[in-house]
Image 1 (cartoon, rainbow, N blue to C red):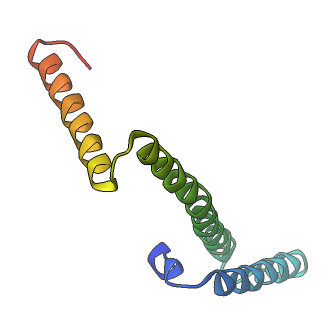
Image 2: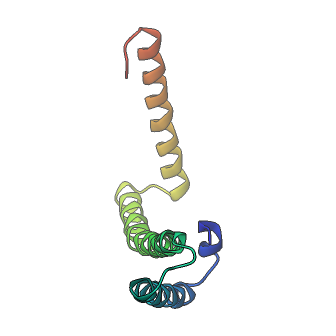
Image 3: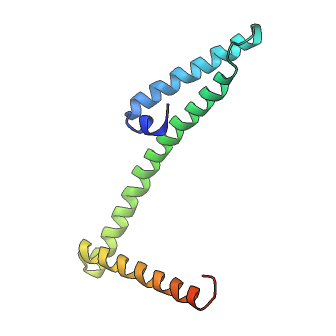
Length: 113
């Protein structure tokens, strides 16, 4: 299961898949204590699938939490400055262009940025 497939799943489906994989990992570990496992690479595969699922869940949580905070902060800044969102985006692009020009000038002068 790769990350793109996981991102297509809903949060509930991811949580259900996590529960399945954890149960499968438990059963595999239990079996390995009592008998030889046909494919020991299953441990790695399951562990990595669990990590991928948890990573996508954490990313979604962080995006929801910090994305909302960023939107509120930008909106508050725009209201304080009495600037529209389009003007705010233009200001951000202008600052980025200035930063790039400064870095290029430093590279031309032979200094590392």
